[in-house]
Image (tube, rainbow, N blue to C red; front, side):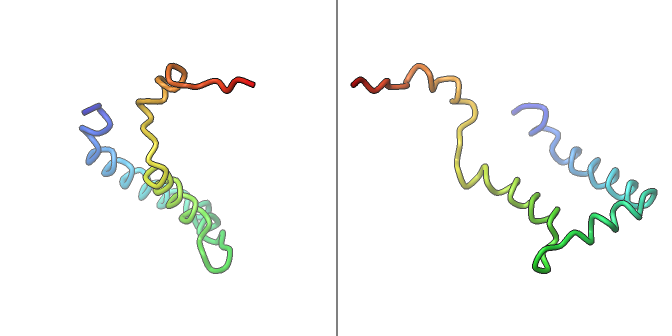
Length: 77
């Protein structure tokens, strides 16, 4: 397990604390972000959900991308 995975709970907690603090000290910025909507869907939330879901949908093994060149087949004419 890498450091990110090992300390994921701490990362989440830190993000919650930083986000809450930023919202407290800069409320107008986050209110303007919260008003970004399209068809009654909050755009930032929708984008972040897709960023979270797409890697699971495509099931890319990022650790195997280095092996692509070794297994590539060249089409001959």
